[in-house]
Image (cartoon, rainbow, N blue to C red; front, side):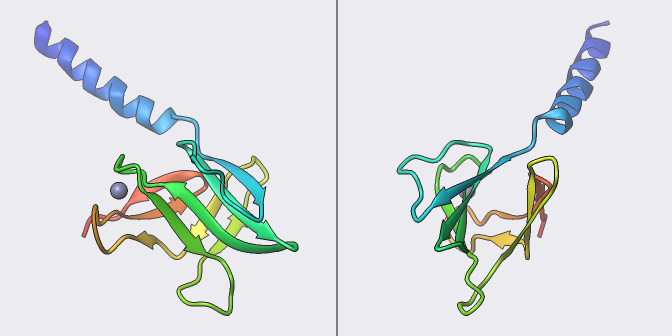
Length: 115
Ligand SMILES: [Zn+2]
């Protein structure tokens, strides 16, 4: 019986992870807030132009990941917005130092890339 419980617990945990609410998208003017909230994708706009996107690293290391959105700078990401308030980033986000997180941000969800 105990083992069965364990199994259900594990399946339940997995299901919860999938049913977690997606990241919200928050458009901010000119600059990022000093403290970012988890599970929020920030898009900084200046004069109507998307300047950068930022999220707290989903690995839990608490670092702020900033993605340039200006098309004349490299590297450059593109944000696409969904009607339900979520967004996607293209290409994938890859932090090549520290925690080395590599993931896709799709429809407000983190899709890890296992290298
Ligand atoms: Zn991290």
